Length: 112
Image (cartoon, rainbow, N blue to C red; front, top):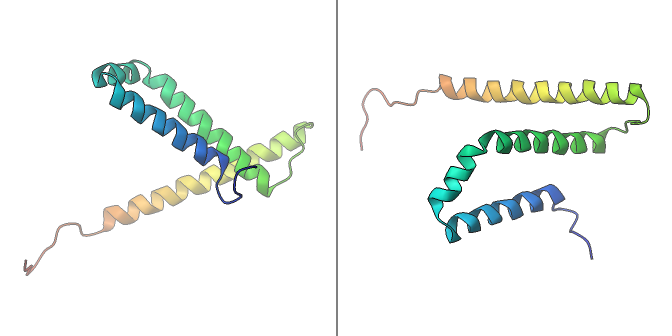
């Protein structure tokens, strides 16, 4: 019996890791866990970046059929990946720009 098709495996792994971290914080001395995370923050950040790279490469592979046995296949993977990454960064900057332009403080006649 496998996973349902609507639940991605990476989501289950992420939820499992989150549950493990929550249990560690709940059952142990919180200061020790936070100290461990602070001391190893670089490695956690590096693992997060690697996980994002792998997950996005898997999602790109689903849409495109790359030949990993040739240099041309790897080149086309890199081109598609950086194109995808550029569109993600562009979308994030558009959302941030839209949020910055909003009027967050009410002005004029405000009734409560």
